[in-house]
Image 1 (cartoon, rainbow, N blue to C red):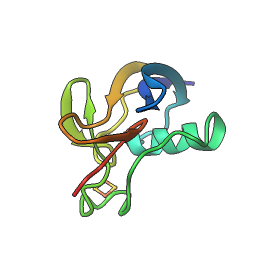
Image 2 (image 1 turned 180 degrees about the vertical axis):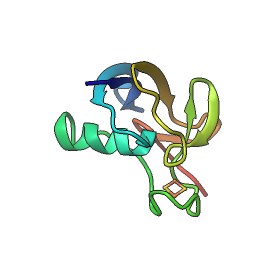
Image 3 (image 1 turned 90 degrees about the horizontal axis):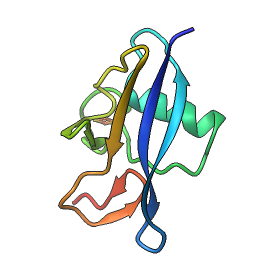
Length: 103
Ligand code: FES
């Protein structure tokens, strides 16, 4: 079975920032947001991420930095047998993990 490895920023303003790796079973068409949901469901429910519409590119809440470029986690597709770095948006007040203050 194929998988995708996510290197995800964890932590908050008190604990500081670190990366943690998660191996997620790949499913065809899976978005990075869906991969993060899998992590929350099977490995760590405390992983913070912002989202609302889940796939419509309407809410803009899931924006993050993916391999150095800003994009929407719900519209970026996971690539089987690859690894991807996922960070919160820079330039916004950081709350926790992938969540930043968005106004
Ligand atoms: S969850 Fe709404 S744009 Fe991604």
